[in-house]
Image (cartoon, rainbow, N blue to C red; front, side, top):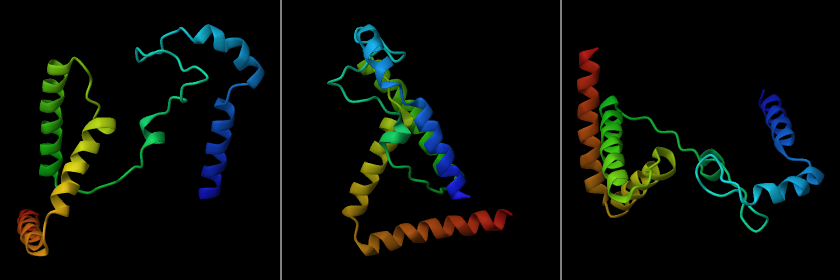
Length: 134
């Protein structure tokens, strides 16, 4: 099944690659155009624009519904404050989640095993509450 998926992805990428001869003709027209995000189109000296999925490694996590709610509320609050203060967007995947992970990693790096055990015990007690509700 993964071979079929990789074949489909390969074909999709090949169909997205522009024709090199046509690229030369169109490149002069695009050099001064703006793209849909407000930036200028890439020139030969610029790097090719990529999506967040292409640039970053996906990390899939499982958390409590309360943790998800806290993350969403925190993102919405920080997004509004950031955009008001800096007149710039704060993307969830490309900005917020990366900072969330970095801050979490910094906290874990400074944590010793007794602190880790205390946190795990807190989580385990929450798990027992969830189980008793069901």
